Image 1 (cartoon, one colour):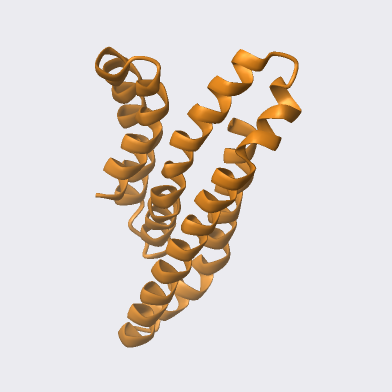
Image 2 (cartoon, helix red, strand yellow):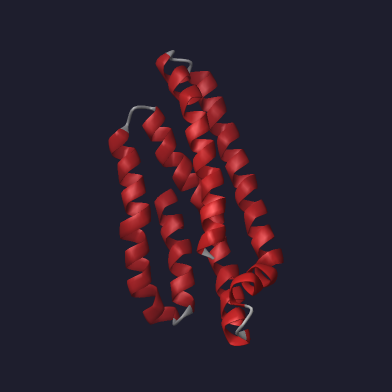
Amino acid sequence: MMYVSFIFSAAFIGYSIGSAPVISYHYGAENHMELKGLLRKSIKMIGIFGVCMVVAVEVFAGPLAHIFVGYDLALKELTVSGFRTFALSFLFMGFAIFGSGFFTALNDGLTSALISFLRTLVFQMAGILLLPMIFGINGIWISIVAAECMAVF
């Protein structure tokens, strides 16, 4: 799951890094209408990518799990089930990553760092510690989805 997650998050990170100079330029030039247009287009594109990633995981969870854990049927079934739940995090991940990059491009490092810190440490740790007590093993997979969702808000 983490290998696929790294690849998918790399796409979001790449987009955020690639769009940052354009955002910074328009912010510095005080082209607020262009900046708002870039933000709207980026949000739409990230949303579409997130949905496509979730669909891809839902379709290919079995073959991807087989590559890594095909030697154990029970482990493969657990992985497929967990991966399909974990995949919902891609709906939110791109927005959190882009949000952090967007604030960096606007020269607001504090907000950017706060988003990153909360997303990767606080929310994930809280979710991993609390949600398995409520949902059992599924709480582990849900914790990443919850952390990404909270980071967006």
